[in-house]
Length: 317
Image: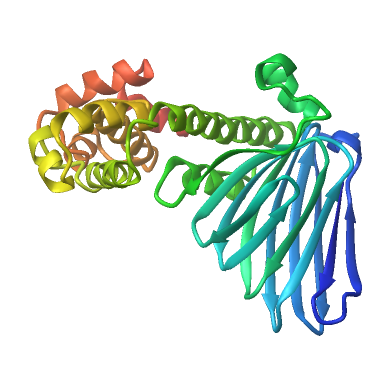
């Protein structure tokens, strides 16, 4: 795989980044930093790859519009997350896609020939997976990865204030040594992949819901996340979002894979775990996430994780 950066004013090639076949290496992972300063602005890239996967953090600081040509002569599965700025993607066999801050998309293609047009400074987080990596997980028959098949868009949407954003932060902040970091990063890449595949499944499940219904369901999700201590009842949530009880319950389960209260439970437990890692007292954590009775919190936590909340700080230490 290679990335070629071209100034839109001079059409002169400025940078070519190459990678080994299947991102294979002789060590647990390989890293590279690239900086380029030209008349159109600056480009920075921080890359890390291990067999089958490459993680790229890129930033373009522009004085003028910039065109980025990206090419790969073999299958690749790309996950792009627009952290700041804006770009337009023209991908062969897929319509032009506009990505604004907070947008994400995932697609696969038997060979990549794409053009990114950046009109202003931007930061992006990208993961590229090889055919071998994907096939090992899903098998060719499952997702029909024919070398002759056209590019296919898997998932799109806004990733801000979702688990996707949290996983990206966990990846960028990872600092474990050697093979431990490799294992950790691969687990996070797989988590991103599973979330996006779930999004693809739920897209089909929500065919009976309008765009307005989906927007209201997303609003319901945000309301739940913002009110862990004093959660709304189903009736209150339906009233606040303008959904009827049936659409709220059925749509929420189809779109997010949890019931309303199942999602509340998952959020509470995940938040509790992070707070306990910071050595907060069990009673304090219970109150923060909305449990009036610490014993009820302890029982719920043990059901989720299989151990007592009081053990988290010891495990972290």
